[in-house]
Amino acid sequence: MGEEFMHRFRGRFTGILRWQDFDRLWNVLQAAADGQWFIYHLGESPPAQCASDGQWRDFLAQTAQSLKQRHQEDYCGLVYVDDADQPGMVKIFDPDNLGVVCGYSEHPPLPAWVLSRIAPCDLPARLQPPPPWWRRWWPG
Image 1: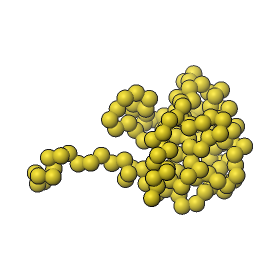
Image 2 (image 1 turned 90 degrees about the horizontal axis):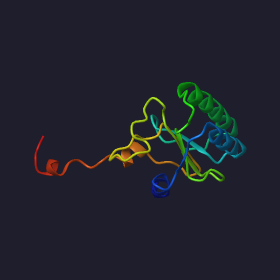
Image 3 (image 1 turned 120 degrees about the horizontal axis):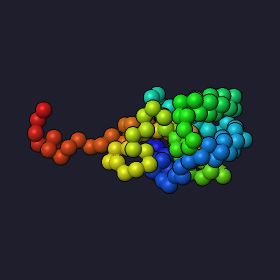
Image 4 (image 1 turned 30 degrees about the horizontal axis):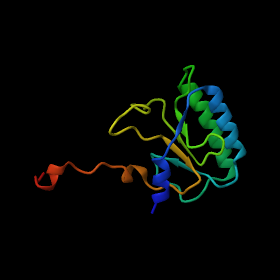
């Protein structure tokens, strides 16, 4: 379960670097309020149902305001999308917990939210690294 979501999550994403591109993407997402989007906050359990149109629009408005207030830079760099013209998945990172988002890291930070047209699975559980090899033979 969740294989398609994981495949898409690990797929190719484009970073939204400029605020004007962020606004353009947000306009595309607002126009896509069709009851077919899951809003997954990674601090909570994955949603079982799509957001209503009202929940979708409220989330987009509140998130845009929050990101712009909390990340007062001349660039965005917090949002990644699979296709800016016809998005199916969007990753939104917390401006206070970026770590190494765009660089190389064995354990890059997870996004704060994932917007998806596919039902999400429990990302933290699915992405946990296996225990070190020696733990199989060494107790404790």
